[in-house]
Length: 392
Ligand code: TGC
Ligand code: FAD
Image 1 (cartoon, rainbow, N blue to C red):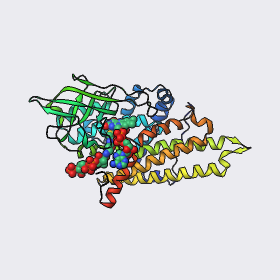
Image 2 (cartoon, helix red, strand yellow):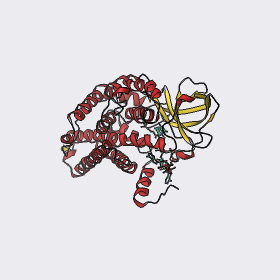
Image 3 (tube, helix red, strand yellow):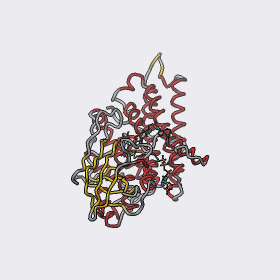
Image 4 (spheres, rainbow, N blue to C red):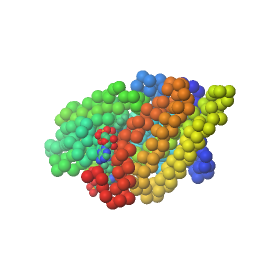
């Protein structure tokens, strides 16, 4: 892959709205991505392998639990800092951002928000440092968009719970030390359980042959009569609202992350268009390429404003699920469209691993599907504005 010459677009001087802390956090993540992600990511994506050596670096830039309080090992930052970290990591690769999203919002957050003090102390510092890696099991083979239909279940056996079922499409599962698993009790109520690697009957086969998120490990979670200690139940919240509350946090991070992927595609396409000469002039001097590039920067700027305002609302505890859905949906679609256009600006070179665009484009095909599909987020907005739920 070529040297990383990335320069972040900031057409509306949004840096002026950031605090010194925001900029410090953002710049540290940006430098780390240039130094530790760009040089290796294409190779790992090509060989479909998660680069485990980056775990320590992710922990150092505060990507594991950015908004989890310092007393539990988190970075104690605000929601805008969290968003900026996700933006910078996804500028490098959506799969790397996935690893951080899952660890922070889908594993650390439920333990912090719904766990006991003992669970917080036992798991959070190790998750923040990367000593433990976690995964989140909600989706099942027959229940993706409709997780309330899940069949994974646990029975009370007196001194332990007996867990049975299977989860599919689980980021980080092949190497995770712990899994936050959502399962129904005997009354059909959904609860979160912490399942640890090594528990008898628990296995995590890897899913192969993905064309997307190739540098992220995805797999299954299989529970065959797994004895889960009773102290591993998350007692603070139950019902579908418990996992959906975690998704709010992860979807918010994705709304920022997608901007990073889009910025990288735009920046690459802009530089290429200025340097590539056809018919005796740079292709950047042609109206058709200018249209593409001008529309890209317009859409990135709108997405940045949406994410920033959502971050302010989130800091104030006022961001609604529907507002988060709108931002996730808009910003991921924005990014995937920009990746497709940017790929064309590079002509044939756009399909090679010399440049990051095709990898971003393929990654975004997962991002537009996971954490609620593009359709599901539209229906969440639809239900919110009309008062009519089209899911049921
Ligand atoms: P519905 O009846 O609407 O809601 C059930 C209960 O949950 C409450 N609720 C929420 N609570 C907290 N936060 C939220 N965001 C909430 N949304 C809803 C709701 O009030 C209700 O509470 P109660 O007390 O009345 O029972 O549920 P539904 O069955 O109609 O489903 C709604 C729907 C379709 C929107 C939801 O299920 C959904 O979002 N589906 C998409 C599934 C999804 O996003 N899966 C993601 C899996 S994880 C993943 O993809 C990780 S990829 C990560 C990476 O690698 O980066
Ligand atoms: P389905 O729900 O079967 O949807 C298929 C199509 O039908 C979609 O286009 C959808 O929009 C549409 N559709 C569904 N319902 C409706 C409706 N009511 N009206 C209109 N259209 C509808 N899950 C986890 O729990 N943990 C993870 O870590 C995780 N990581 C993932 C990593 C990757 C790489 C991928 C691809 C997925 C991951 N997922 C994870 C699963 C992800 O959340 C699901 O794929 C997603 O929620 C969609 O579910 P599904 O794939 O079963 O599609």
